[in-house]
Length: 128
Image (cartoon, rainbow, N blue to C red; front, top):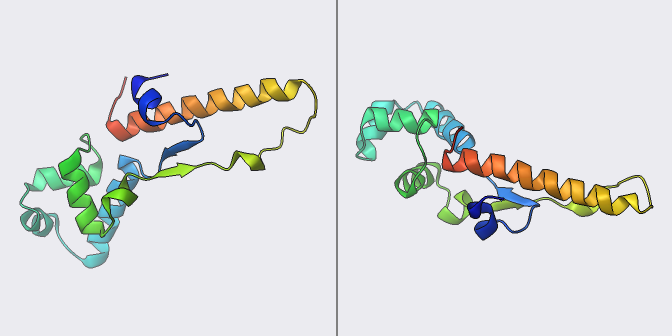
């Protein structure tokens, strides 16, 4: 397990609500819906056009400055942007009631940890 997951996501059933790709799409969609250009928004937020385009393309690591701009533009609080989704694992049925349940439960937990690692790496921009 990564250090980041170990510190911030001890529960394998929770993950970030938004990836940078989801946020980029929300920004792009809202800009288009409002009929605004990249130039207009870059000017409004005192950034370069290429900086704004990198937000919409999710081509850079999202840092606090970018989250602040996105939150302001989308009218979403910092808490919402950084919130987590928690899976309700009580809905999972293993279809058996034997000693295999414990093994299946451990496999589900491991799968969640791996999935969380993938999501977190996307969120913080780590690529192999």
